[in-house]
Length: 215
Image (cartoon, rainbow, N blue to C red; front, side):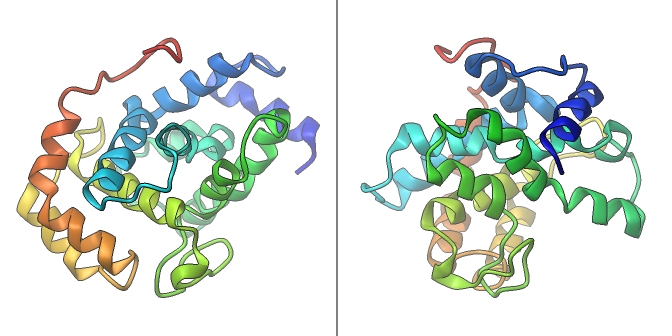
């Protein structure tokens, strides 16, 4: 996708076809899908704390979580919010969002670290190698990305959306254990399953939107 194609598609989400100031861009992406990115950034930090992972910068981890779905800016809203199962063609369209995210972030490539770009591209990679778009496996997926992937799933399942009810904590715990070593890093997935009540409780204090990086 060319830069012109990417910028033109911003109108899908009522954004002007020009580069936004970085704080406005981050806030817009974090607030998409009823604040999903905002919560993912928070949960990612909680997971890292619970796993006692000290070498990952928390501010970078938070920003990576907030921006992971940047590519969905270029996916039609009627697909993202469809109150039904997606068609095969629609699923293929949605699965393009990691690559599309790189087209959007080219505007900010001078400020985003490689960790941020990796997360935007790789957050749907699976530990067992069946994810997309690169088919990476195991520790070939950066640890920061593995954390955000779990945070993404936890919020997507645990939060109420316009188109779905939240999963119960026991149901989500069971899913995390089933996908340990499959979709997710087994060590991190086990921690998340064991500590899920604490993680979900921490999410209750997160606002649904914010309007500045100072929030």
